[in-house]
Image 1 (cartoon, rainbow, N blue to C red):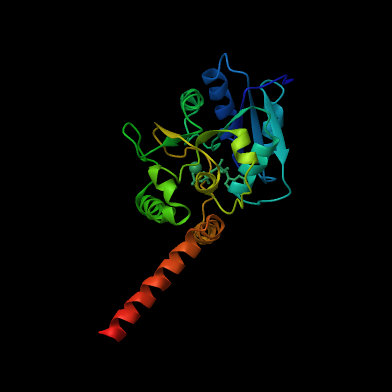
Image 2 (cartoon, rainbow, N blue to C red):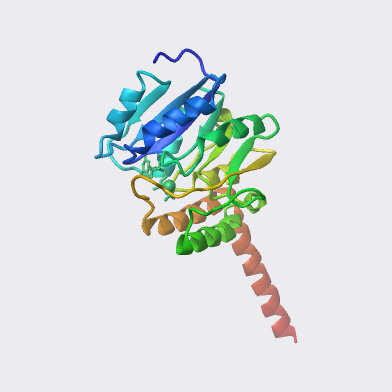
Length: 256
Ligand SMILES: Nc1nc2c(ncn2[C@@H]2O[C@H](COP(=O)(O)OP(=O)(O)O)[C@@H](O)[C@H]2O)c(=O)[nH]1
Ligand SMILES: [Mg+2]
């Protein structure tokens, strides 16, 4: 399908989502009637043929497909998609239907009042029922550590969300490392936003395929936190405060 001009780009990173993609694209088409949009699929050469499925969908729906040579990570796929997008507004969402397409119009209209709209599992009306046991715990601990990146990210209850909308130019003007899974956290810590809104949604269970989140993502998250904390100046400030308190305590002990 020829895409003329678009207002909104939906960026969808994919790795082995052959069954989910057609359902996602169809549900988006229904939800986005009346909106000029495109879907930007960034696939990491999925061995299950996801890219081929996406190309076939592009004959009927406004889908563009970009294939990277191998599995290079979720956050960097999202950043690639945002750079390639043509809309003024960008929505980032997973392909696996855990992010309901029907919430996308609410995210887009929230951008009239805010710079970033986050689909949130942790505000009234939202739910994380698709996050079970240990995954839930790890996600909340990760959230508790998030102010290390920058204290202002803590106002967002679901800064670990992979489902959000943003003005594209806000991301393009900022250097991002895009390590691991949590690109929203880095965007919140570094991009010059003034207002964030959270829109509740229910994070459902995955029906087709499997999660690609492995244990290595915990390490990636800690590395991301450390580097972003250095970039924003939070870590140097924290360390110098600790050193100054240490010196003050030592001086008091010596004088006593
Ligand atoms: N392009 C790309 N997409 C990825 C990669 N890892 C995960 N994804 C996609 O990112 C989305 C979220 O991944 P998922 O495994 O469902 O994570 P979970 O919901 O946290 O368990 C899905 O659409 C995946 O196909 C990757 O390395 N590259
Ligand atoms: Mg998922």
